Image (cartoon, rainbow, N blue to C red; front, side, top):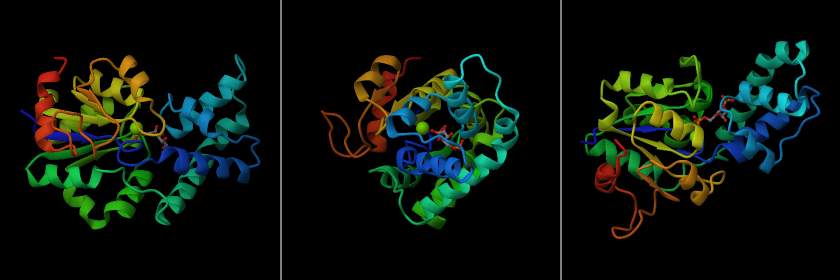
Length: 249
Ligand code: XBP
Ligand code: MG
């Protein structure tokens, strides 16, 4: 029985990464005098590591195999990341990032049909809140029963902790919920929490490749505006319910 949807944020609710977080990271690097600029492709590879601070360190380690992270980077990481989030907030507030097609409609439809809804994200709470405010405004409070962010967990995705906490807030069993994700780390996190997972890859996800590495997803679709045939049309709660028979366990 489908009782709740648990939504990922970055890449799922909105395409925040390429033209949001990435640009903010690059501007923060430039302001801090750090000689690093992530192009679209490089950033796509770095998304395998979730969490902004973790991603910066991962990139440095990739480029300096076996070397110790310099004290200047380790000590400046918190301030660098705070500045990056402030720059990200500016981008979101000026309206450059929209919800992905079909997201607002499905959020409202699920609510209207009595489904509970939560967010399980590895982004910082301030980023999540600014995005919800800029896209859904005051309606966001009525759509979600709980929001789990990066600060709320000890281990970020692909660790299941964010999903386990979201389930705790909802007070539901994993089998009664559906996770909606865009990425491999997100899928792994959902599955490790034993949640059925619908994958909706966006600009950073190749649908075919993701389907191959994420076997066990209830479905892999390109957009919430287009449910696959035979039903077709926008993804509805009814269509999500029909996926229950695809659950891996
Ligand atoms: C995606 C992430 C985040 C963002 C950046 O989260 O991994 O790290 O890229 O946000 P999700 P921070 O897909 O789980 O929503 O810099 O605040 O970490
Ligand atoms: Mg994501």
